[in-house]
Length: 454
Image 1 (cartoon, rainbow, N blue to C red):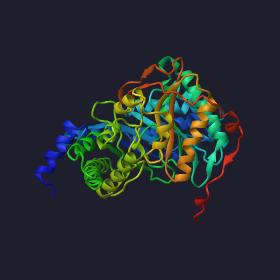
Image 2: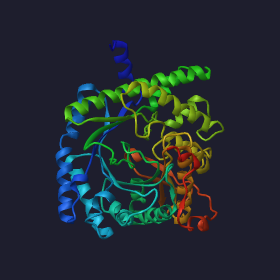
Image 3: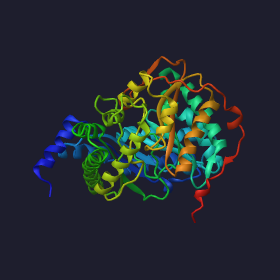
Image 4: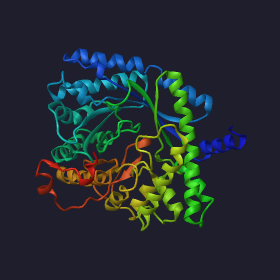
């Protein structure tokens, strides 16, 4: 039974501490849309999404109104388009027509983002994979809210360094094609190691081939709630600290479970997972970095940051997993620089560097996320950054990712404004030394020895 104190507590979390359901993401399989004729393929994709997603936004709004729980985004993820377009697409421009179809139907059903303009190339690239990857810059430049992801490595397969090198060029080209808007196209593009099939968060969401025809995944978020809870235990020992985080994560996740069950029932679509990540926003008081400071750091990036983040991530999972039937996606703490005011403050204070962020990604949910770098950063340097981050994921059997924005025409000391949930970011310095000979070798980095568990 839920008592009145729990109801009042949840209301306070929503009204004063920025608790929200970050997204209801409807995953849709497009496998039954495959066709060798490009026009028919686009028509099938449009009709399938329009039919399945027609009530998503209205249902989300009704749940918000009835339960008083903010649902920030309603999103769609689809089967990786490289798999769907292979039979019909003979050029990168053919794939771009699919991106435009996705953006058109996205706008018509009213969702905030659509993800799945994706390729899975951890061991090698098919012709369709390569065509899709080469189409990404134009696709993101000519659509509004379509998101793209590429999985470049995994613990089981190693790292596809040919694809890593290519993605360095693709990120730079995407930046160039959207330079009039501060290279914002790169904010819709992420590369992964060990990408999960059920991630509801953009830009990395896609609907995995192991999933049902349609599925409801929900992402919850409450950094402000966790920070407020920790304010009441300042100076207490680690046992008290951990218990407080666990209990708070449980309460936050229960809200997501309620929303997921309601959305599933009303839409007649199976419930998939709750992603219990602490995803910040630019709003004051909605920051993962502020939690780290509440734990005892002057700024995120100070000595002890990696340990504090590891503790936070683990306790969030321990508390949240008890509150939901199914937990999946990324689930933990996000550290996107542009979307977290505390992270921005730490960068501006000189406390937080790219190298420290890389160390933090060993113990958090994802990776180098929403980081603005100088526009003249070389494609090979970006490829080296990607390789480093993917190696962390491969060796540690976890998801890692890179979403960097080389802002054309801007350098260190300047900042870039993306707006909305994407926030703003200072341009961070990048190690100036070359890795050209390393990333240009070609081939694959083999899977680590602990991948052989069969």
